[in-house]
Length: 502
Image 1 (tube, rainbow, N blue to C red):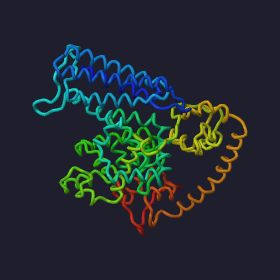
Image 2 (cartoon, helix red, strand yellow):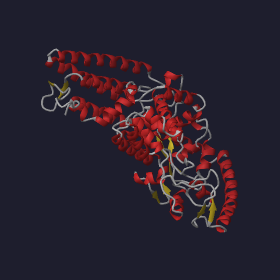
Image 3 (tube, rainbow, N blue to C red):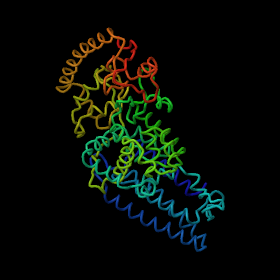
Image 4 (cartoon, rainbow, N blue to C red):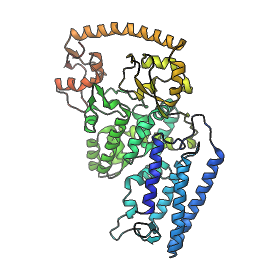
């Protein structure tokens, strides 16, 4: 096993542990405290390590292989140790170490690489083979190399086109859609520990996940589009089934943040193979359909999303979607370049066990703005516990996933006290109103089995109006011979409805 390969595995294992909440040093702490002395010392050592590695490569090229082996191995060992140490220092950005490693990796592609499978001090040529194949070291790590390259951000421009369309998207995110971008960031930080590991395991960049989340749902797990796409990454029912998102015990798994991220990653990797690694065409396929994009690419004879032969004949929605996703991804990696500051969110995972019966809405009221989350905790509680009805009374002993700040706050704020009493009063009022609303809906459903489609309707909205849930969309479609995945309907159309609202 080469030292580069072994080092990659160790670094990425450390990164995955950080994502899962084992370490928190890759991001500033919730209080904003940074150990500046330790951080500056680590970054100073990082510069020295890089210079030592480069000196080793120079020695290797000049034929001094023994000395080169010593310098390169020492540099890699030191970089590995300092990257892991960074994860334990408050405010230390581990992405700096991944960026440095990626740079060294790229230097190593064009130079002799250190191989330790048989002789740990032997330098061998692993540049380009006679057949034109890439280095065996790089070839054995295609997904990991792509992850590192896209994560550190320095090489993103080599993979994505930052053109006028993307820059226009950046302006939109920084102006009229700025609140949406910030909301997405807050929501994502709360459920990052559930979503990002799925992307990492698939070898995909976090920036892409954030970009798609921003454009699709703003990080709202229970988002449902007019066309019936559901969940934080907006899967249509049929596409969700294709990638393992079904209904389990009445819960639509498209609303599960971890499962939806896994399905989305599987889709992206599948389509990367179809479109020969062209990420922009893959993003377009996610929005406009892979069949359409394959046909357009074949028709235009081009493999570039920006080629006028493809770009000019795309629907306006897709032409807007791709640069907006790329723009959000770029801002996620480089906020400082655009006078953008994301809020500091403590998204460390925790849980609470209810000591008194409560609903999610009651907990939201009693938690208030604990932890300085300006818009309260309702969305966070729903996103982390997506299968729960926010108005359902949960019994004592129920365990809920919550952000870390709420774990300590629960006993002090939501056991007894004035805020708990207020929350119960408000919830009782809601409980009194809901049966009356439900009775009206049941009466309407009981007196009619046919629904006349109105302008702007979609099957998801019709299902809700008729007392059916999202899981009955497919049943309505089958009953009326409406084809998936887009479920096309038109105003004036008469639909037969199942009796699910009675």
